[in-house]
Image (cartoon, rainbow, N blue to C red; front, side, top):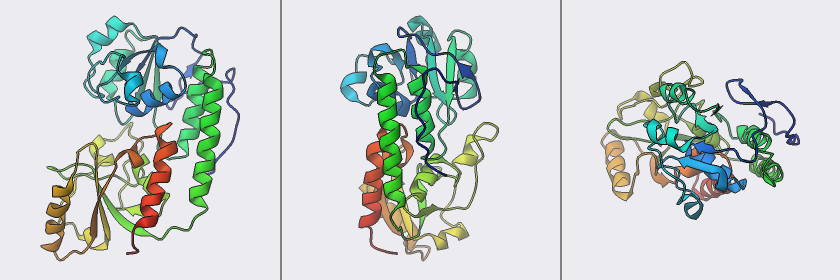
Length: 293
């Protein structure tokens, strides 16, 4: 997917992931962000003063979000509490929020903006979207353009390197054990450093397929595990730790499998927006430091 460097124009069409068109938000817009990555990005754009609601998972940057009211989780939003806060704009994500929540938001929030980054390159259009939507607030459009340009440079630097292929199982949950489909943002981010995820399944765009397809359940007797040479236990959404590394090694050894097992910071592969500016270089450093398979 090519990296483009188009300027952010606050007067241009402002279109979200599902094709909804928006007018530029007024400088006094009241924003509810129900996605951690988006909350952090909005703060970095200089919009902290206009954030009137966040989820309990929106924890970064800590000092800036501490005073912003919490309205439950990403999938169990306290709609009554949110209604009282009277947002004019709500930002949601296809993977992280439910369709039912979005439909209920539309009953009392004038503008519900739907996002769905599916590839690291989609951060560029995300910066364009937010920069244009909130360009009435001083400095937002300029900050969005800066993030856009810096991220484009980061992508080019990573792609300029030659990465050895690693066959990876990226584990996000246990009981049941869950991983990621190859057409998710996580898998495509890992692919930037040569890490090809297993199993070879696709989950679709997340609009018409069940979430379990995008994040499939697996068991340790699956035949494709013989092709895996690196198992990554992510720090989120399940918080894997050192004890889980040893447990997973035992699962592999009893089946005659010899993949390496490592912990990985889940933010490196799953958080998008402004967080990706720092996390992609960290991911590339981790990949470069690993011994070859």
